[in-house]
Length: 257
Image (cartoon, rainbow, N blue to C red):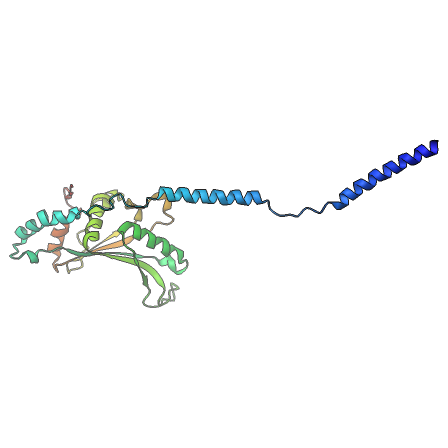
């Protein structure tokens, strides 16, 4: 009897072990693949962030459909500046009165020789400041000491005319120039002898369109005011009446509108 019970117990244990082994053998080895749920959640989060950014960007301008107002600085020139210059210099014809023909903003980027992405940032910043797409300027000749090659893009420039010119000059005089550090007035000796004036800006952050968070590197630019006269004294009087704060002025002319 004892032998029969031992055989039964041994058979039961062997069957249980065999069943466990079969169960283990039936399982396939786990694959090291990333879970699908995490990838789906990351794509959903990215799409939600994209939709939030699209919602923050206005689809239409606030003044869409309304008539475009005339530049206030141009109206100030017609009503105030032109009669004053006519009386000061004794012009007999209204077409003899000097005016601003165009404004040229030029920015040279010497580091673009090594890194071309810096020029892309400068182009975007100039587009924000002026409201017009800049033109990339190329080197006219090769300079071995600087590693410069002919035809390489090393700068950008914008030429403003018409209403954009007047609007830019208005923002420059009213907002940007007062934000210059330790500003003591513009130099009156920066005329070229033919009625054109050039001023230098050391930092692009003086313009309110540029935020401090988006600035990677500080760079300057040259702003040239091209007038219709070829005499520096007439151009000086014109720019002074338009509000340019030259050195030695008691109070610059500020246009209120």
